[in-house]
Image 1 (spheres, rainbow, N blue to C red):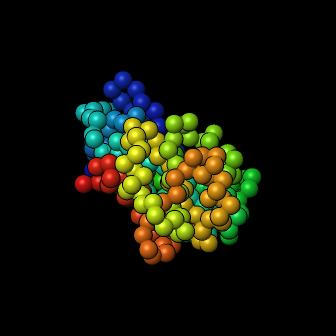
Image 2: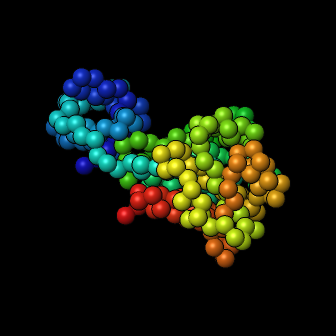
Image 3: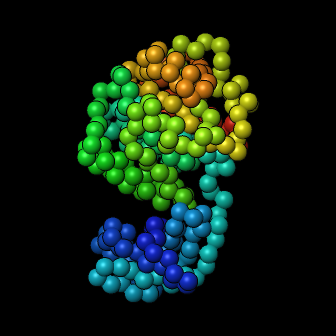
Length: 245
């Protein structure tokens, strides 16, 4: 059954507008009487029947309401150094499927991609759309938020003050991710800092340790690509707390 993000929710009805309405009508060619699923980022999903298709909106009558347990109990965020090409898009898509709570694109010293002003906003809007499609595909009921492109000093303002920070670092030889996770509180957010293609500079790791109290950890003896490290670390965090299998 096709899934859509609800534009407006009423008592026994919801409406689809904009791209959601257009996708239903022009791409899927659904008609009144067809059944769909809608979600509104509240944790609920609604089985509904299409009542009417208008020029600007689709009206859907709610048949059932449910609260499926599909969201990760631990709020895990990725803070990803800006990467070129489709790497960031891939991380966003796969991170959403796995259960990330959100992602912060981070400006770093070794980042090849540079984003400022309107270009940064446009790229975040694009990433949010990719995130939304992945959320529908993976049957999530809360769409992760792609936050604004940030500098290091802006990170604390992006996430709650109780956030626990992890920074995988190739020069960390003694402390493993599993060891650190045993000390963390899974009821509080966890943010995973991932470098760009060239990795973090040592000064950036030191800044994160001093200002965010970030724990540097090893992901093993092999050097991982930035996008691989992001997905591996997220998988390990959610798996450790029982959110994956």
